Length: 410
Image (cartoon, rainbow, N blue to C red):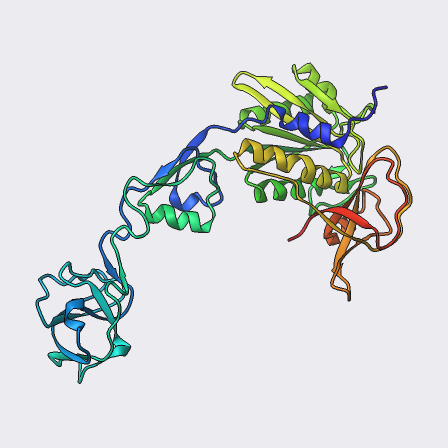
């Protein structure tokens, strides 16, 4: 029997052919958290005119040689309502934030530094001078038409979306979201809300995996529960191809028992199996490869049937695969904390221990592994803040020793 594949080698194999998908045009309103396929240039200049940054008066700085000074108010400018005309010697206009500054004015005096009997008064007294150009946002201060402001590969976060709108783009070419077909396998499975008979359980894994897919930039396609027959498996895999899935995720059925039909069915359909079984716990019976079809090929990831195993493997392997196909830069961040209690030495498999995180009275971060770590115990997974990583053959550790972990919750 082949030795178990190390986790790092498994991840490298999964990402080897995970090339970025093609692009698609989407409305700006649907572009958040997507990745640009190409550089994006501004279609306009911002601001398109010199604008006031304050409520006050637009003046000629030459009229401020001596203050206080009374100036004649010859008009008014508001946002969207420019003043049409020239400002001459000893004149000014009332101006509001965002309004265009006339070319014949060069400075804004804040309202707080003026006195005026009323808004109808023809004169305003300027009480305090200010440097020339103060509070005037020059045309093109932010960017000019033709400037490339976002590069290919940029993730469109809220600030980038606002910038894109200001650049006057209504549609964007972004990397297509990976489509992930999810199939739960097993005669014993029933959907939530069912009446449970003898030997039956509720199918929970597909919901958690679908949530991971959607959270990390994919589109989850739930194909449902597949019974333990080769025909049912082949139909379900064909459905995934019909739905143009980029990734096929199976839950359970990846071992070597008589009812574990995933691998044999995929092979009968011409699939390539890159690896099966890796040196980790939970998640040893993980399978990966590709299923060719008439339009290309579909990556497949055969996850273990145990609920915790499927979620841990999705965190470590499915998220990076979705990210690579979707054009996202992804790195599994490993952090360090103090171990909350003693741990025995490890065997040949890399362990991922569910644990809670807390800040001790000394201000240091502590990771406390749960006492029970059975891969069927979903309740512990739901309350875990992180996964403590224990390398193969790690020696026994004491409380207070440093440990590495992967965060599960923000």
